[in-house]
Amino acid sequence: MHFESFSDFLAMGGYATYVWSAYGISFLAMLWILLSSLQKKRRLMAELKNKIAREQRIEDAKKLENTL
Image (cartoon, rainbow, N blue to C red; front, top):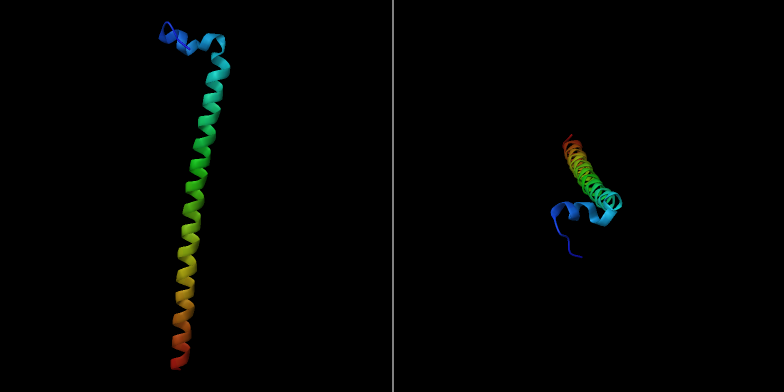
Protein backbone atom coordinates (compact mmCIF):
# COMPACT_ATOMS: atom_id res chain seq x y z
CA MET A 1 0.00 0.00 0.00
CA HIS A 2 1.35 3.39 -0.98
CA PHE A 3 0.50 6.59 0.90
CA GLU A 4 0.78 10.09 -0.58
CA SER A 5 1.65 11.76 2.73
CA PHE A 6 2.28 11.02 6.38
CA SER A 7 -1.23 12.17 7.28
CA ASP A 8 -2.62 9.66 4.75
CA PHE A 9 -0.53 7.01 6.47
CA LEU A 10 -1.95 7.97 9.86
CA ALA A 11 -5.49 7.96 8.44
CA MET A 12 -4.97 4.40 7.14
CA GLY A 13 -7.45 4.86 4.33
CA GLY A 14 -10.29 5.69 6.72
CA TYR A 15 -9.63 2.79 9.07
CA ALA A 16 -7.28 4.62 11.46
CA THR A 17 -9.47 4.06 14.52
CA TYR A 18 -9.48 0.31 14.06
CA VAL A 19 -5.87 -0.05 12.95
CA TRP A 20 -4.28 2.14 15.64
CA SER A 21 -6.51 0.81 18.41
CA ALA A 22 -5.47 -2.73 17.42
CA TYR A 23 -1.81 -1.71 17.58
CA GLY A 24 -2.40 0.00 20.93
CA ILE A 25 -4.21 -2.95 22.47
CA SER A 26 -1.53 -5.35 21.23
CA PHE A 27 1.25 -3.17 22.62
CA LEU A 28 -0.49 -2.86 26.01
CA ALA A 29 -1.04 -6.62 26.17
CA MET A 30 2.62 -7.35 25.44
CA LEU A 31 3.71 -4.73 27.99
CA TRP A 32 1.39 -6.26 30.60
CA ILE A 33 2.79 -9.75 29.93
CA LEU A 34 6.36 -8.46 30.22
CA LEU A 35 5.71 -6.61 33.49
CA SER A 36 3.78 -9.48 35.07
CA SER A 37 6.56 -11.91 34.09
CA LEU A 38 9.21 -9.69 35.66
CA GLN A 39 7.12 -9.34 38.82
CA LYS A 40 6.60 -13.10 39.04
CA LYS A 41 10.33 -13.69 38.56
CA ARG A 42 11.11 -11.23 41.36
CA ARG A 43 8.62 -12.97 43.69
CA LEU A 44 9.99 -16.43 42.87
CA MET A 45 13.57 -15.31 43.45
CA ALA A 46 12.61 -13.85 46.83
CA GLU A 47 10.83 -17.09 47.79
CA LEU A 48 13.86 -19.12 46.72
CA LYS A 49 16.19 -16.89 48.74
CA ASN A 50 13.95 -17.28 51.81
CA LYS A 51 13.79 -21.05 51.36
CA ILE A 52 17.57 -21.35 51.11
CA ALA A 53 18.01 -19.19 54.22
CA ARG A 54 15.43 -21.27 56.12
CA GLU A 55 17.14 -24.53 55.14
CA GLN A 56 20.48 -23.11 56.25
CA ARG A 57 19.01 -22.12 59.64
CA ILE A 58 17.56 -25.62 60.07
CA GLU A 59 20.93 -27.17 59.21
CA ASP A 60 22.74 -24.84 61.64
CA ALA A 61 20.24 -25.70 64.37
CA LYS A 62 20.80 -29.42 63.81
CA LYS A 63 24.57 -28.94 64.10
CA LEU A 64 24.12 -26.94 67.27
CA GLU A 65 21.76 -29.60 68.66
CA ASN A 66 24.37 -32.32 68.11
CA THR A 67 26.98 -30.41 70.11
CA LEU A 68 24.86 -30.30 73.28
